[in-house]
Image 1 (cartoon, one colour):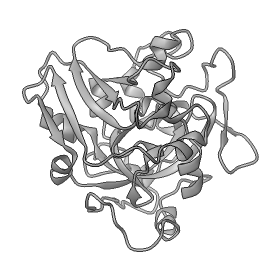
Image 2 (image 1 turned 90 degrees about the vertical axis):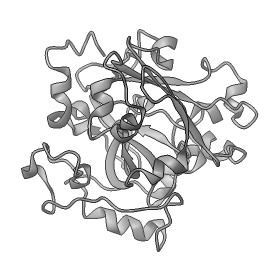
Image 3 (image 1 turned 180 degrees about the horizontal axis):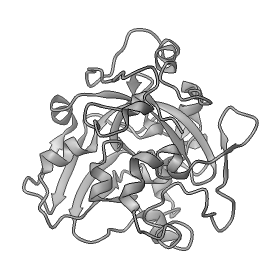
Image 4 (image 1 turned 180 degrees about the vertical axis):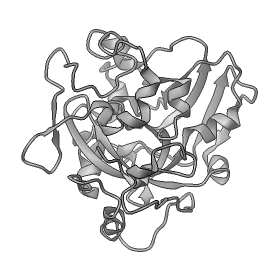
Length: 305
């Protein structure tokens, strides 16, 4: 299965170059904190189409920004876009803590002055068996890990969503234990496909999509890509993650897209791409098997789901 050329960055030179579409085009672009680009998101959509894989097409800006899960703003798919107007993502800072040499609370503006924002077009596969193709803007998580300078004993990273029940109405209800937390193994976090996103379609992230900064891990189910990150914690042992804490029989820590392992209540063999009528077959690791399968060599992916 061919992958998107826009998944290839200068930091991932080991990826098989024969898999490029449209030649060896790198899509790194310099953007400011406001991610201002000339033209509308429709114009930007034309720019991204050249990097799409065969059989894929971009979801529209409207689909991406009005249909998603963000329980901090409600349980319905349209709730985040309807109930997030009062959330204020500026100014923003992230607390780096745990097993690191440089613990600090760092402003997002400072982070963005130290990295280059890139275009990444990724498939997103929800555990609920719907999917999208999204043009993100962001930077490799490894760049922020470099700033934190973890100790050798740091084997995992835990992420935490901001807790502001006065601005996030869903946090006023006991839908989930708040604040939302997620985690990655260190090698997953350092993988060049793992990014922190600050925008999509050439615009700042909207509140409903995880403003101002969120994780994107394209080979895992969407709930792993935690939104509105306020704390990044470096730890020695596997950290807690909200859904695997809440329903461990249904949601494991790894949560890799796996069409061979069904959810207890539905099949994961196919998915509904938003905007399409027919269901399509789900790909192992969401189509990124060649790039990430080595991370799980000799692991039982039915046991470590």
